[in-house]
Image (tube, rainbow, N blue to C red; front, side, top):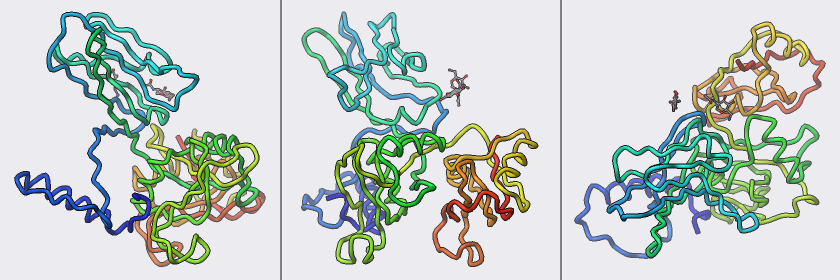
Amino acid sequence: MMHSLAVCLWVAACFTWTSAIYHPHRQAVHKKLRYLLEPPVYPEVSAQRGANTTLPCLLRLKPPRYKVKWTKLEAPRLGVENIILITNGHDQRGYGSLGPRASLRRAHTLDASLRIANLSLEDDGRYRCELVNGLEDESVTITLRIEGVVFPYQSRNGRYRLNFQEAKDACEGQDARLATYPQLYRAWTEGLDWCNAGWLDDGTVHYPIIQPREPCGGKLLLPGIRSYGPKDKAGERFDAFCFTSSSAGQVFFVGGRLSYTEAVKACGVQGAKIAQVGHLYAAWRFSGLDRCDGGWLEDGSVRFPIATPRQHCGGLPEPGVRSFGFPDKALHTYGVYCYR
Ligand SMILES: *[C@@H]1O[C@H](CO)[C@@H](O)[C@H](O)[C@H]1NC(C)=O
Ligand SMILES: *[C@@H]1O[C@H](CO)[C@@H](O)[C@H](O)[C@H]1NC(C)=O
């Protein structure tokens, strides 16, 4: 099972994979893996939010008459196919919400690759390029991965207060969206260890553990993603795992001993807005923002981003965004993180 592997071995898995590429003639030993993860062998393209990307799809031969149909593969909604673009080799037509941002690359006559402009968080997922030829329809599937960061999110009212819809809204209020399972899994391989269970976008609930310990599923289980499976979306309450990516704006710190209201004003004076939690995580991950001062954020929480861990800045050995929770908004104690 992929979620029962120690994370330190992930690196070894990558190494094994790399050496296989460099020694193509070496006979592969087909032994059932116990410790190492099978390396990913599926085609994947990755890019940040706001970027343009191309999903490759090439014809080997050109049939006299054909259509190429690009669709996004999503959990079936009433059997509706999520078409993005159809071309007959001459004309093309876009459909749905992705249509206006989609076009064909057409680098040469056999090229049916799909370009998507201004990527959004929702574009993450699997896409199918299908050749409709009457007799022998064929298709290939490509995964588009939006590069980003997963962060756990708790209500200001405390632990396990969010039903599914509230968790979804909470992420969207922080320049993010509920993470998918592959996003959470990847975040775990990159070091995310969190002992509170949170909703994912498919209505399942999980938490990622790197250091097995008593209050987090016990010491006997291997490191991995602990799964509660699908939960009652309306009736049960957990935290959320949100996903965000780089954003066009910039995050900066304004110092002082400010209340929340003064913090909002301090950003306004700079022609900016008080930053959301997703903005701070994105700046930490993509711009290496590192600041040892707690600052207000839009949701009323106080956090600070640490890229280079050091003793007097929270003391934790791992880089991360630290939180002071949700202090009294009238306290004149913190600076503020602004977004512009
Ligand atoms: C994306 O492509 C458009 C033209 O299609 C271009 O104007 C824009 O600068 C590109 N954006 C990025 C981030 O490269
Ligand atoms: C890109 O998309 C975002 C919304 O996702 C929008 O606010 C922004 O204006 C778009 N940028 C361009 C260059 O179209």
